[in-house]
Image: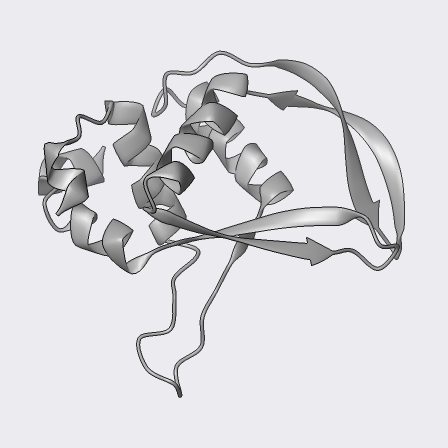
Length: 131
C-alpha cells in the first residue's frame, strides 16, 4: 500500500480527518455520498487555524462566491499552505475531487475522502483524532 511508506504532517492528517467528517463516498450502490465544496472547506480550515487545531498561515484573498444564483467577489482569509495540503492529499489519492458548475456557470471543486483515505485514517491514533 502506497500511503504506508509516506510521512504525512500532522496538518495533513488533521485536514484529512476533518474532511472525512463531512464528505464520504458511498459504500454501496444504495448509499448516499457527500462532498464538501472548496469555499466551505477553506472556511473550515480557517476556523481550524484560528482555534489552534491547524498550523497554517493565512492572508486575505479575493474569492468569487456564488450567492442567490449569481457570483460576487469578497475577501476571505485563505491559506495557501492549506490549499497545498489538499493538493498533496489529492495527488496521493487520499481525497477525491469533483468539478462542478455553479448556477451562473462558474467552476467549483468539491472534495471527499477516498476509500484509500478512509483506510489510512484507520492507522491514525485515536488521540490525534480527538485533537
